[in-house]
Length: 227
Image (tube, rainbow, N blue to C red):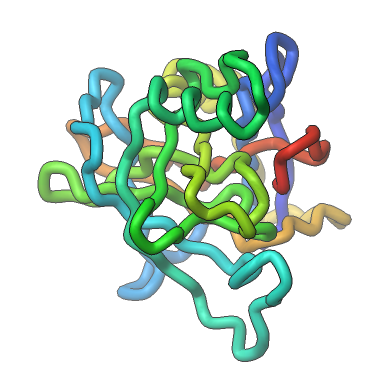
């Protein structure tokens, strides 16, 4: 899929590392949905999810810090639990040796303390989805964490609900594309395939005349983070 525009959040990393780690991609053409290609819903603004709720992560990243995903490159998935930001900050404070807050309000944490399942290198931008109440909702976008040799620490995601107003504003202010024009040449090569997102009411949606994609905008690697 050719990408026409990449809109980076204007306050990306202005206040703290990985802050506002999100961007929107406008595709040159709309996605054709099938029984295998289906959009996921955006969360409502007031979405409240209970701590320890079971959700799912997916991606084509490494299987471990030292093991790449090999052909046929099957999509990997794992069940993880939501972790309160306060506990997440406490855990990262222990590994860093200080009580500085690393996980902010526009972020959320998820992981599995019993199995050590987490996102790994190459999973950036992948979805964190939860089944709530009877529909799949895009709750988070894979953003950062410790390397995969420390799976006891939760993975940190961009909190999608925090950015619904910005998402709507970008859609409203960005011109639509001419679908019959020649797709632009792009050198944009994401490390993993992107996911389209959209839904019917009462949930917000990314779907309009053109299809939009969400992903964390992250090309720097701060200390102690692996993606």
